[in-house]
Amino acid sequence: MIRTLLRYFKGYVKIRVKGYSPERFLNMCRHHQIYIWGLTPSGDAYEMYISLQDFRHLKPVLKKTHTKVNVSGRYGFPFFMHRYRRRKVFFIGFFVCVVLLYAYSGFIWDIHFEGNERWTDETLIEFLAARNVYPFMRKSETDCAQIAKEIRREYKDIVWVSASIDGTRLHIQIKENEDHLPEAEMKTEQKTPKDLIATEDGVITKIVTRSGVPQVHIGDTVSKGDILVSGRVDVLNDNGEVTDYQYQVADADIYADTTLEYTDSLPLIYLEKMYDKKHRSQYYLQFGSWRLSVGTIQNAYENAEISTEEHQIKVGENFYLPVIFGRKEAKSYAYQQKNYTEKELQAELSENFRLFCMELEEKGIQIKENSVKIHIDQNTAAASGTVYLNQRITEEADTEILTIERVEQDESGRVDNGDTG
Picture: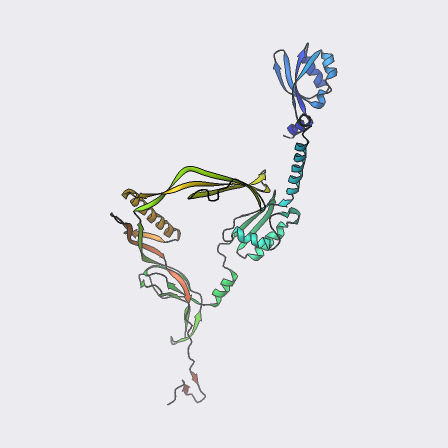
């Protein structure tokens, strides 16, 4: 690759050697260290490539070997410059382009985040902007180690950060701790005792208690709002009497069989988009906040579907330029009223129920069975029935704080409980 570039910048020619002894010509070139390549026979002659510098030293060799040479091709930068020597504007523009590319390579034009799920790109960009890290800043002013340190300091649930500069892009990789609980929330939970109450009516099927006092057992029927695990622990004396209470945050996994009523309906008539062949496109070139547009799609059609596609121009893999090329397209359509067939209604309602079940399963809810039926007549199309589930039914609620009245005994041995008689 490097040799090819050197040949191009120095220039080279393709020659055809013919004469009394072309083989002797080749031997003389080797003897005088004249480098040739791409040697191929062509009838009673030979064709080959030779650098422009070595071509100028061929005259003595040609004279001694009684051969003649014809130039059949000229290649490389010197010939390119000679061919377009009168086009000064082109060379000035080329020079300006090279200078601008060199200048642009000293700036950060894009910030890319990877691995962040809890914190959005917009949130992190605002955070960095408040610390003078933003697109269009100089690379020399970018301290990757400090950026990583600031992010870890601000966001406690981010356990690992890597910041690097790839071309003109600031690349920030993030690893979040999914089990992390914000510090303020931890303090609140540690100070406030909590009960676990039922979120649904059901029959208990599983209990795994980590802290707190269970109030129900497997097989019990509970109603929404019932206390399942109490955060209040009784302190008993030797006689089995409650003398005090200890409070904690109840923690348990409690599952129950529950039921859910499912209903869904569809209109018998619907509007369908009918696209025609009419469409308009608008092309634009954007540099920062400045935009140059060609064409318009504003109010082009009564009903139009607009799609946008844009690309940031880059050189190579990571050299991003502050230039965005985009296209907006407006497609014309009209609404046409159509009637569902019975088969289409059946398929649509079945698909809706399948998606509903998928959403429940994604939430960790087990579907044991269902009695959902589809009913279609001349006026309505609906699906209804009962879905039988097994799910976690706990949510936190504040624990009721109780106090015990102290019974004091005086020096004479009498008990004073506050009564007079």
